[in-house]
Image (cartoon, rainbow, N blue to C red; front, side, top):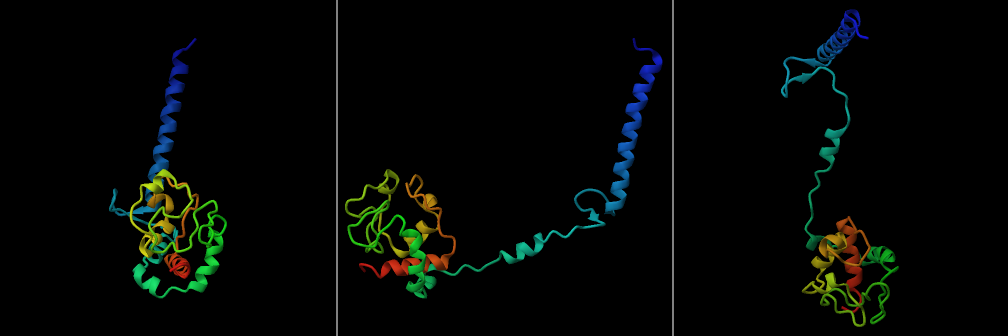
Length: 172
């Protein structure tokens, strides 16, 4: 079935294909790299992607929460509370899907009367200080793993400070 000529053609085809790939790699290397090889080699042609610009823009000085809270605007927090109003109420004792938020700033955690807290929230100790509320509102699932609260969090620290300042006006 296989004779000497068929085997010779197959081996020559494989060798020829390998030669073409090696020559292509050599050509690409000469076109796109100058100098040596390895990690320190300088590229001859660089495609700008904007990654350097993005890295420079991400450097943001973080303002301490106490300063943000001192300068917070409760009126701006009132607008932000609309997202919270889907589950929380501001009337004392009026629980919704979430506990009522009347007097939440400074109140002990899991102390809203008549609300059935998740076991994860019941394990929390302390009170809802502005700093604790800030950490919780930034990432509820990170602050209290296993919480039943489905909110993903508020990323902007200024918005969190405004919201907490608004909540502090109720029942303080």
